[in-house]
Image (cartoon, rainbow, N blue to C red; front, side, top):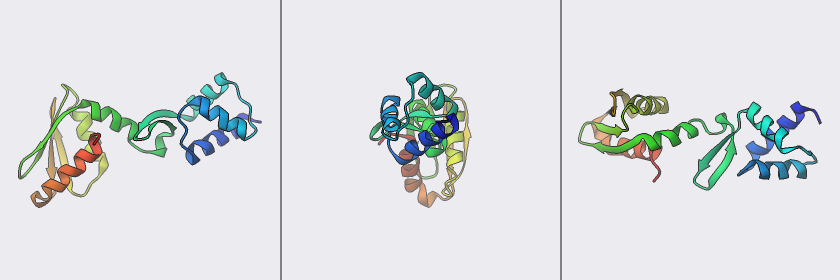
Length: 148
């Protein structure tokens, strides 16, 4: 089997099933009649951009476009120390030097309830579109930035 066909089959398997590791992927390839060495499979995964990501069900192999932002979300979760709100704004405290990345992640969520963010060194100010929706905006941010 050609490299291109083998990689196409790898992508098909990963997009159609939840695969936890390369050993499991190798078994699924063998079930499909494709014998591949571990080193070759590892190179294929690297060339295809396959990532090992943590999900609610445990680790699994994914493509970056399989779940946009999932890898970044995992990093953002570790950078946040607190999320608090008052009647008008939401303030996120981060590790030193991490506020810009957290603010950028929030901006890329493109939620219409969020006008934008302002990031300093360790603080992100989230500006809601309406203060009437502050609680639901806070809930949205918490569910998209933290493990709940």
